[in-house]
Length: 597
Image (cartoon, rainbow, N blue to C red; front, side):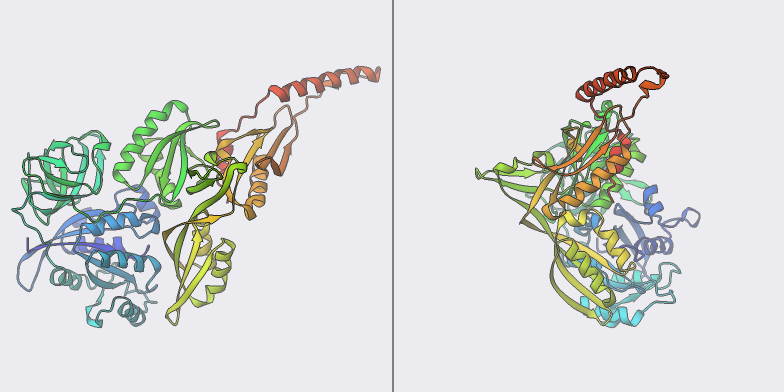
């Protein structure tokens, strides 16, 4: 056990985690040169196309340490850098004793770096600071060194300089890992305690759980038990994770690996659960796992109603691989049956939609994303609002509370003004700002979560030319002046388009949706009135005029009364049609309206 090192790589998005992991795999010859490709650990096509990591990946390396001549087993977990996937990072950190804190030499410390660092410090991990991309012509090595020394409080000689591209400094890094990160502490003789930190679904072998053994030993064929779900299985195969799974006869305390039990039902395994033996169970489960709190909710509906069960299965399999996704069934008058899904942010929503389409061939419609609210009625009842449809009648409503977040933005001083005006436009409350260095400002703000869900991140990036980084965490609920905006077509409300909006922005929101629908809806043979309403009050209206058939075309000359008779007949027909005709919103129009940007 003394020769095992478990560590993860944490950093802000785009600081070169995956590239540096590639060099570690190459230097330790874990992957043959002919199998080597960029972003070797990113297995999804989606990750390669976008150049981001979505899932944390575990892999075992062997390093021959030149000082004592021994071979060390290194378990590396590469993590995502985007703020929406910080849940993945917290799970990886729970399975490690050390963390490589990566900082880009050209960009310096950014918001996600700081929040991931605090996560690692909370778990008492040994931090090895690394400055990456030192081969770049615009690398500011000394300046970034000072930033790291200020932040982590290390000595200058403790910072490792590397380049993920050229491989420079990777040997020094491996030496630092072996010498500075402690071996896992655990007792191989004690009852088995293993933490499940991830799971995947394989259509041939069922659910595969990835774990780290804290105490005890797990052998092939053991009867094991999951602590929280209290289900028992046989460990058909245990082994270690390299690029492929490699079966072993037994795994001891400190090891990171996988177990296949032939579980077919995804509900029976929970990420964060503890595995123990059936015969000699441990006293208590392992702590160090937070419950996931979804931030953004959206309805996900199959395009064809008969695909509902297929969508349920796909979501269950996705949830195994991404335990931050939550869902429950719901129905809508406009879209039929579907699910109310909870996501960690807009990128997460986009990725889930893409993965449903690619991995499970499920084409879905997503409703307008919204956050959850608490409504308090005059009868002193509390209603938890997941969707605008649950919103109580305005006459019985006392007040509504909406979720707030504390945001950290790190940027260059010249963009402070533009960022301030963006945040004020989004109803932000400015808390304070501090200069990390003369060219880096950290701004602290409090914002309503609903305001940052849509386009906040994109606008922040564009006004700061990519130089602002953003990180946030929830801080609870506060009272807000919110109203429900209903969209009506010929006085019939369309529930999938209603939204909860702040009163000051309701008018503009209603206008925008009405204008968009006017462009998108096909003409009917009767007039369609598109209205946005708050309660009984109409705040915006657009009208789609009727398609007219030229009924008088066959009258040449003759008396005017013949034409009038035909026009009167048409008028009556139109009136009748308007009473019985209902307006179908085509699926394409739904998808377009929901892209309101």
